[in-house]
Picture 1: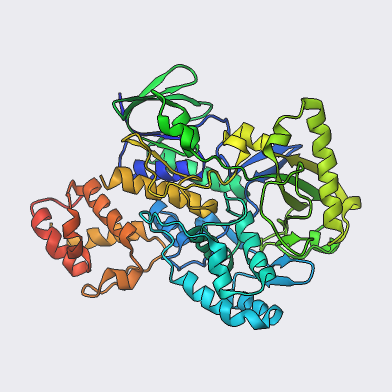
Picture 2: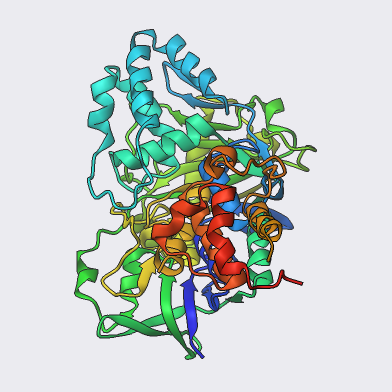
Length: 461
Length: 87
């Protein structure tokens, strides 16, 4: 019996696409290689503690009642109420460089004032840039024009430190490209982080994923875990079936894949010539989770998220060493507006990392390297922020190698390929992509990606 | 179905699409888009819900008829008049 649609991957984009299709009575099956939901935004358990992967915070926070924002659209499309997501807002975040600090909250006017105070000569240019950003249609799926952001930023802002500081959070939270960023991506990220803002769902990714899974199943969707796809079988440019790791073949009308563009083309039979021309992503991260014995604010960490550079200039690129310790992101999960305090203090540290170097290490050196580079990264943090080493009760780290293993993304590239396929099309007629490589970013972006691709390629047909 | 029944059907659909919205105050003759922030994604949903619930196909060129509640009723009445309200 044929499926109307098979969706590859049970991350946010796959689950969202699945919900949309099941909602309108399509026969739909989501196949997931891993035994846990979530893909790039997932969770894992160590010593009875559940840690989110990918999620520092959800961007795109808008309050209940705002319906034309990305979050508002998502809730409507998936038939959730704002309350269902149990979002707890950030307190305050910060971009910290050697000479300057810019703080921001979920109120954009606060950030505008910070820019005015710290960079008084630049505020007019900044305001003009904001005007341009607010009037830009970044969600246009048919816009093929590629603009890079640095030249545009330089036309509004003279001070390169301010440009670096604006770029820093936006690049860390969504840039697949080294050095510069596509302008539409810059706009998406600027709106989602500065204009809208941060929140965390009570219960973390585990809660959100469960919510989506339940809705999908209630609507009659089928979910198969531990079911990796070995091949996508096409005849004369049209997919007829997909083959799973256990040898089973699913006949299918349409396939929506969230595993990445090149990762998807790689599984097509007969092989596609386009596969060789794909640009693969390189940007990956090491992340360390530090459980501490008290609230982070008692240790001098009172911000929700801090994007920092200990060097005057910020350069977003794959480091030559295993990781780049001079810049990173600190996230204190406790510093969000939870109804009750979290049981333990948690400080996460994220640094840019080099996949190839991590991947080629032998097993025994790999473990030692994780410890070594975690210590180096923390030492660098402590030149800028208070030392909390004596308060650590548990430490764990994951690397680009870990990300590759669990998500299947080549090079552990968490933001996928720098070249996005906005309309989701592939060289195969009825094979589409959603998720990271389609180009909407973050938790809300990924979810909207699944929704948009399901609407465009299945429901509107 | 009566005009009132059809009106209620549309309201039910809107309630499903926009659970946080107060639909009791919707005015029949003002554009829905202006009252509850409906965008093109939502209009697709109204159309999809009509297909799902009543097997009615609304071609894209007719979406403009769905701009107001009164417009929806006028457009749907000939299509639904011989149907019984869902039990």
